[in-house]
Length: 257
Ligand code: NAD
Image (tube, rainbow, N blue to C red):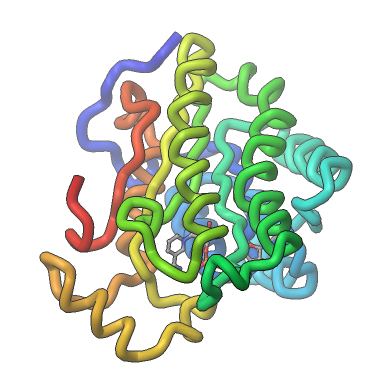
């Protein structure tokens, strides 16, 4: 049954929660893993970057575990979800965070079909597959959550990034459809749509573009991972139990809808 709202969740709100985070070897996924563990959860970090993911899991301690996966492969994805559920003793939440941005700076007429296919495989097909393989475990959880990573580029239509933007639009649509399918099972499905955030993966973005985003925000400062982690913690917590099918843009007011 869906949960009732619990006001003012404590920092202990995620104690014992069993969480799988894809793409957690670096960047936002790594920051989410740290925040979720600090809130009392146990986390499986899944990534194709094995040495980095393993090192991070070791650093995070006994409540973290790394599982290697190539999300382009269905077999690898299924094996990863099963290993994650085995280590955690079940699954309460999945954060579909892994993605690639191969198409940055490329005009649509120059975009290759293989790049399009890769972007769609990692950014759209993989969140579906991870959720599908996680479903039998989530169904057993009294507190099941799926959080998908979209992007505000899909809200304002960033140019020369078309495959990525299309994939993140698909994540928004998929979130709504999944929410309707899974709500009666007590599983909430939501997405966050971040604006440009300061992480390793966005260092390639020229300084003048960072400046452009900053000036366009109602809150004119750089966006940092903590701006997103707090929303992820909320979506995993009991306090968000009646919120589902929603896309939460987090961008300091760069896009308002
Ligand atoms: P990132 O590149 O640092 O992280 C992505 C992770 O996914 C990496 O660890 C990478 O190894 C992993 N990954 C990629 N392909 C994989 C595969 N085939 N199998 C397994 N793992 C794979 O990027 P990030 O900026 O931390 O982005 C995290 C999420 O946030 C993404 O979904 C991204 O689209 C979204 N997002 C980021 C920003 C931003 O400004 N950083 C803005 C909007 C949305």
